[in-house]
Image (cartoon, rainbow, N blue to C red):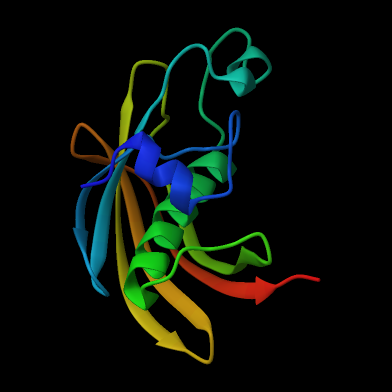
Length: 146
């Protein structure tokens, strides 16, 4: 379990781009279950779409990647510093199965598939009320910046 204060110590993201509110379960080197509360106050809803607010698919992928980053940091036992950035390296098989709307709770299940040469590969599924909203294979890597 991880609350928002612990998440803020791990992820560099901040409002409006921090997309993980809580970690519900965490098995070191295995899997993470995280939560994003989707509210009408999200800035993207103003334009996506004014007549029917729907969470953009790319932001569902980003939320799953942020959960994956938390799992990666826990797996290697490190906290990122100002010289480390965690990047998307690839997305495969992304599928969107249902819209995510204000009031929904997006529950993300991310499992570590493999870790090789500094590249992490994850299987990720995001659900609302046990219905799959989004699924994808995510590849991420950490890089040191100057």
